[in-house]
Image (tube, rainbow, N blue to C red; front, side, top):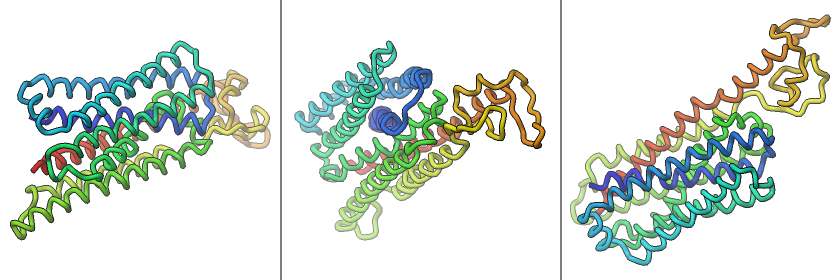
Length: 332
């Protein structure tokens, strides 16, 4: 009966947290106008995932039995705060996306707007955790729960934000800045918080059960769910790190047609190369790349991280679902 809530509480922190990844990108990298247009178009992806999660929550609340469960089990004030933050974040994210799509957002305003959306995403995730913390379930009544939700938002949102950049062919530009280090540090903080919260909650449940039934497990197979969740979060970090490897877009001062390769040239300088599509060598024996080959190399590098980041997002979503299944299994 609670499977829709399992998906919603996994998808909402992930989708909203994507704006944390985007904020990291805008605060560390100055993208070209064309790149920003592509990023704005692909920002619809986390908004769509958030919408699907909201639909799942609505499906759950459509049942009178489910509504009664929410009314009886969760503090009305905490539930109201979570609902308010859901609306507030949705408004901020949609306004940001619409204004950016119509080209009315300066770069300074974009950074400020994205930062507000990122902070709102974390507060929104925490508000969901607070709603559960204030419920009638003893094992949920802990500050660990909102800490875990904040961790979920960072650990899963940053990979989704990176996927948006990769799909928009913006990741090579971001590699040349502090974005990679910043994104990995933010995701690492979220991963530590998420793993800490999930592990501590299970240990608390084990201690509670052992006090009455020595040697018994809180939930059969609970350790399997915990291992799946931890492994998923750690694997996501590794996949993120792997996606940041590759040629960087450098602002090289090397003359056109010299030893500088396509990936080491400014994006705009590709058009300045000769139209010879075939690689050749100059008098000194160095390889010279024609314009068509250079464009192909740049395009290939721009999307090379997409498969790895798709896998990273599938893995982190599986980790979130495992953590949420374990959470609801400890509802006693």
